[in-house]
Length: 269
Ligand SMILES: [Fe+2]
Ligand SMILES: [Fe+2]
Image 1 (cartoon, rainbow, N blue to C red):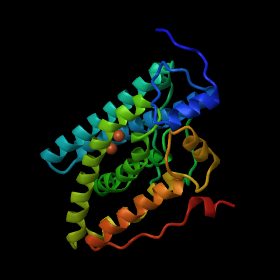
Image 2: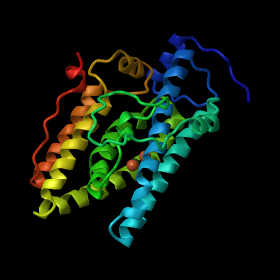
Image 3: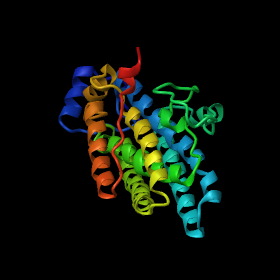
């Protein structure tokens, strides 16, 4: 494998501004590599811990058909983790060692705790994956809110400057949309039934708020750097707002009430 080992920041930025895509063996500035690896590690860790959180629901799903669907979702998430870890491996990360060292199955034991944007372990998972999924309605609402939120985030990565990531996201995105559809169908069903409407409203209040917290602060410096390097396209708040609008549409269609969200970064003193 032959490669020029260095490239100036200016020249590199010119390449990506012209729409050129970067491959694993292309020279890249250290700062680019660092931000890219950080984003990939956050996704890889989220996919794997997400899969682990779903596993008990193969057994607890209400019907044999739902057991199959949950098992497929678990398989999808493990495959997403695998694909993103492959991207990391190509960049020289010892992914097996990372996976061995982290406790991706770890969950909070108290469901009602609010951890804001805190991280509880050394892994880089999006912190919503620390909350346990305790009921079937939680599982459904996780599909409805978090898979949808992740979809909005992944939309930026589809067009990012790093080609191996964009290729991996292309397939992942389609599968995430299937998880979202699974959530939508169930939310509609549970919201229409007077026996389950209150429970689904409560689960929406809980998981909507937690999902709104995943996008990060508006105008963050790190987000500006991600955009500079073509690794993200929009400000955190724009992504959050597109997610919120879509939820509002869905929620009003099925007769649920839109939850109120207080930004975590406004509560913090
Ligand atoms: Fe996924
Ligand atoms: Fe998913």
